[in-house]
Length: 265
Image (cartoon, rainbow, N blue to C red; front, top):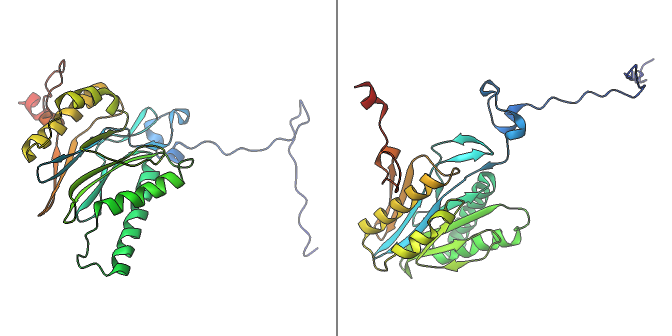
């Protein structure tokens, strides 16, 4: 009859008599991994940025640096990701922890700071106080510390206070410093950075120092790797650089990288 739902047939195990319910098979694509790779789903975890991130102040600006390895458990999901994200023209963010968490925090901060600039009638569109961006990021990280896995570095240059670096580790605390590190690779280079840091470095010295530190972290930390990306921010704007593995400074016991075309030749 119309309007009467058909009777649901229940399948039962002939041996036990228990109801048999179909469970959807686990699909590796649910974890962002192509099935053709044959990676076991139980090896997959949340997409994480790994990672080694750092930033420092130099005489006239700031330098941010990061590796480019993004992983899901034991699987490298992206070997050339960009973990240094622009928030405003003069303020950038280094991200570590959950890729999804940090990307959304960055997008929310960017939106909030842009709205603040419009509401306050800023005379410098696209620019913001570095401390303002750091405080907004800190508030989001602290209020959601039980839900987020996000460690971030905010660095930039503004006309009010010049070059500034703020560290926001897991938990949402905020600290202004001359240099700061983050990510799993930072544990391997903290001593190196404490020993070799020099106040008042030139731009070239600061960029070389960060490249050296990240290359050491890459050589020791399995969750760090790929290329080294740098962003230098100063009064005239921001500049991005990328260094391939063959251009990395060698760690103490590393063999030099040989390009594939050199092997062919």
